[in-house]
Image 1 (cartoon, rainbow, N blue to C red):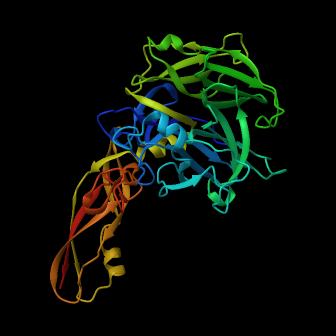
Image 2 (image 1 turned 90 degrees about the horizontal axis):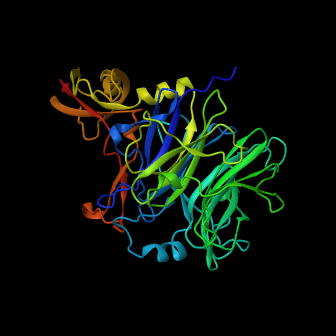
Image 3 (image 1 turned 90 degrees about the vertical axis):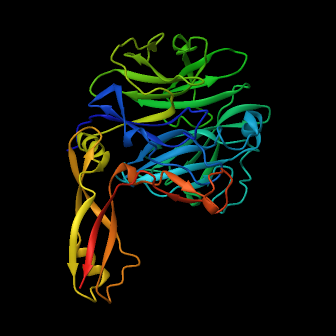
Length: 436
């Protein structure tokens, strides 16, 4: 039996002109409430990019039911503290690479990889793809029968500059690797700058909200189609609403939309990014097919940290929500795990068995949980009597992911050579090993 839904996970970056916050942040819903959000990892980033521009913007979270793998996609762009080419330079001649991380449990994430949406599976320039500028604001929808019955793939859509304006392009992949990447074509070209498409599906229909930056002054607008193959040129889309979210703007623009359906009811949320620094504010709908489905959410209960920018939301199960909460470790209950005695000549494997296998850690949300300890025994000489201080890292915490990097000679410059990723928020414990 399929587990009932409960809770939500939001992926996003932060707007911080004075710092380096273009990284991956995760927020967990307060229970099953999509209006209240709690930052995970103590508000610190969970992932960071050491590749390309070292910036991460516009992240999106998606799931492959075929492989049982979750993916985070993100733009390869660092605005603050990176290359100072400016938006004109970035949008027309910058990175066509997509940042990708994967996970099976939403807690432990793979090292970063990149795929280039302008290249074919061999790594050569795709002859079918147009000359495009930077790839940004990529999202993906899984299509179960994309390659035929039972052969699913993701349709990925993103913004690029093609010719004299910005359009929405699409491609497909089964696993977000270059070897399965295929450029598809143009999804949306309205002859003016059009960016930031997000989609949701319900009752056989596909709804998309897109930002128009052109002379039509439609702002964020929503369209709907009944076409099963909604990404193909023959799909007919009907416009439903324009200028969505402008009531939140207070003199600023809105962009970077993302949608999520509330569990167990016909109620949808559309989060719109009020630029430049306010961040996400929610719209709500109880009828996606109404004349004007989206209205600003008026709720004193709404809670989301400031400057939460352009991301995505994924529905969870009770087990996933609890696992994320219990992985949100703040610090070890005890940093000193005591003394372990071992005879001369003890092997490293035997020493690891003798050391404590688990350690307790306090959780940011209160309480404690137990985590496996990975002991670092490099440099321990057990051939002679002696005392050795050792340390171990708590595994399975959100903070143990690769969320920082350092370059050659400790450089923090975005273009430093030999950048090596590491975790700045991993939790460590220690013990004394007595060899005798």
